[in-house]
Image (cartoon, rainbow, N blue to C red; front, side, top):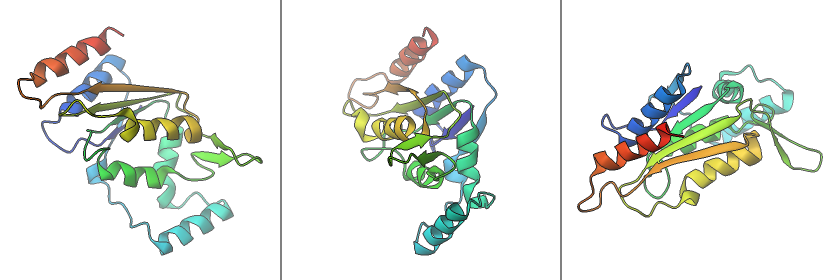
Length: 184
């Protein structure tokens, strides 16, 4: 399982949920801590290099390593808190690097994307302080990519919200969600 960790806080509530998923699944995990990656600047020079390598079918360049790792994973877990109406910017930077024609997807003759990823399931874990955390603001984007570009048909959302509301017992909300996912 490839675990894409976007939880930068040492006391991350999203990470508590993700840890529970990892424990429940009991699978070997390769973890990517997004804040530790050095993302290149996606400027014109980067795009020209990437496009020329893709056109030539040369996927051995290190710029494609993350895309290949993602494409070859049997299962994917993404943990990302709901921040600034979406998810941490590092996750978007990661997505820019894994969207590689010929590695994670191709286009059919009709111009329709066809996924090349091996994973049969992607699980997205998130938490939010408030109750307003619409799926389409973060999870929906990931789900659309997974289903329409990567070929991952089963996409699951695990979400705990309302953690910072006045009077909320954040620990109990998290524990209740952990119990819920343990029973599924």
